[in-house]
Image (cartoon, rainbow, N blue to C red; front, side, top):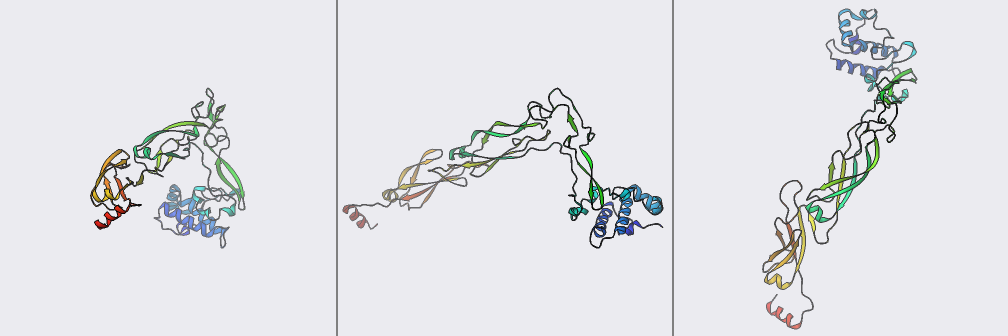
Length: 360
């Protein structure tokens, strides 16, 4: 009797392959025999329908001749077209199709549901370290040399893992694929999965003699010196990224990055406020009342600042362009000078008399 595979999966005859695959996963979840309310016969029927409709060539044959094109009543239970194979008392699983299906019930079968992949070349790890600089170096920029311990490409074998002058051959265990099949027993029978080849660790190649320095890994640990340019205007806590200066990649993979976190030491004279520098200057009561010119120390040297008559304590004067270079942009911040008026103490009688007469 001909079977209606479209009806079994619950899709229309013009359904796309994505729709068929989605319907199969939904039905397989629902009727899986190991779930409560599951139906093994229905589950086999769903798998049979997917094996045909999920293959463009078989689907075209089915559309023309019906299920009779596959042995009269559908596909044989031992053909295994990429879904399940119940023949011979075992189960063959296509892990790509069933990765989602088993995600919720993987532990029931005693496997993780994932498939081992070749290790192959891999990117090296990133490194993060801290460098301390003084306030002036942060303002004007500087250059430092760092000494780091990290993995680097083996200089003896140039990173290929083989002793110089020896042969690198195709792994005989996996035939260069980097993976081997493994049979794992589950409550439903034996399951075939793929794991990384233990002989070549997924590389697909073996060495007649491994490198005597790195033992075939291609990388070694060493101390390296790196010159680092600290840009002008960098602030405390900011990070510099040095591409390719991290750990070396395995098996010829690219190196990671180095992240350099900058700590700026405090300065007793200057305080930073974004790209401005803030300082305080004390003046006498007379200077504040009558006005004066004072010397102010800036990051660029000493400058003269005019104090107008009647200046009040707490007044802030701005020295334009005497601040910190802008890290991302052009120009510089300003130098802000906060004036503190010193109140005179220990006045003589004569001085007090004069102040009373002035009324101030």
